[in-house]
Amino acid sequence: MSLNRNIFYSFLAQFPNLLFGIIAGVFMTRIMGPEGRGVYSIFQANIDFFVLILGINVNTGLVYFVSSKRIAEGKLIGVTIITVCSAVLLMLMIIGVVMLVRGKLLFPVGYDTIFFIGYFIVSFFIGLANVCFSGIFSGHKNFRIVNISSIAVSLLKLILFAVSFCFFYYGVFKITILTVFALLLLTQLITFLINILIYWKLYAVPPVFAFNYNEDIRPLFKFIGVSHIGNIVNFLNYRMDVWLVTYFKNLEQLGYYTLAVNIAQFTWLISIPISNVLFPYLSEQKDKTDENMLAKYSRINCTALIFTAGTLYLFSDFIIRKLYGSNFVESIVPLRILLIGNLFLMIQRPFRTLLFAKSDTLAVLLINISGLVFTVILDFILIPVQGIIGASIASDVAYTGMLICILVYCFRKYKLKIHNYMIITWHDILETKSFIYSKLYNSK
Image 1 (spheres, one colour):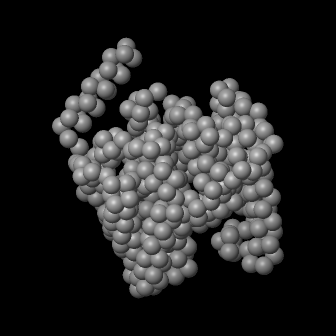
Image 2 (cartoon, rainbow, N blue to C red; image 1 turned 90 degrees about the vertical axis):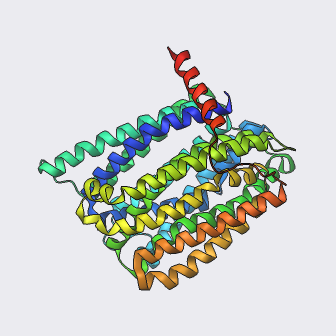
Image 3 (tube, rainbow, N blue to C red; image 1 turned 135 degrees about the horizontal axis):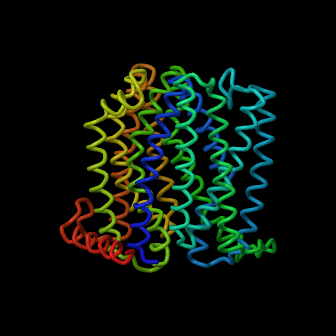
């Protein structure tokens, strides 16, 4: 399937995903309230962090080596199974030690019951397994399957939370945060089962556990090693403020802040499909980079980001008050600030994808470290004084610095020519229009 077609269908899938996700998020937030949303954010940040740490970035390695075919897929599956099983065992050991020493390091006070500990463990396993499945499907460039399954799961999540909200609003049943967590776990489990079914039906490559160190293990871990550290640093860039807001303020303030963060991250739904689809195509270009391809999709990315961020900024007051309720008005100002930073963050995505495709992971690591240093320093200075507004400003400064660094490095290292990387051209519009018309015509 062509690059244009993959990106087209990825974007097409994002619209129902975005719509379903927004509505489900509104229902979930109204049920939980500011503090409940803060509790959910802490759980999700901790789970995502351990998925990243213990998963050792194996999903990125799967995308690269499945698409490039430099390592036999059966051996990649074997390494993945070993990684997931080892990660689960380590996670159980970590939880055991933490609960003996100081449980609230992982679980907020009052949320360290058997149910929430079980939620943490199961959600960790399923989350890690699902990102591995996604890596395999992306490596095969089978984005259509990924998109269809994500739409189905998003629709299911919407239905579950819509029904729950009706029960909550009309007082039919008592809906608590425990109910919300149970529904979230159910949707994750269904996603996991769908991924197993898809893999079994389309590929079913048997795992191979006989490895050659120099041909299989060394190149895989050399690729994911530095990029794994970079992804950890990058994750901390995005999530450090979650822990620091909780530390300096409280769960209610965290609820306001994470709502603003999540709405601002709607812009990611533009850049992530482009970069995910672009990555295997750039990985195939071993010696020479198709600068016209990079410039074209950078223009589409940047123009769509400016339009989306501008629209969200103008209607931020309406979105917060009408959709999430007057309880969340404190999210409005942080949202407006974060939209600017997320715009700069996502503009760099095509160039970051280029660095990963060229295995230039050390550069990504250094850029991420510089962003993290700025974030932590500014967070410690601004959050105690200005609260969640200070956290938003700190993120903006860090993201802007990272954009400047990555652009300067890419242009100097890969000697990219001066193209229009920012604003979509009339030729791009005509080409996109022609492509969409051809898809619609052929579908009739």
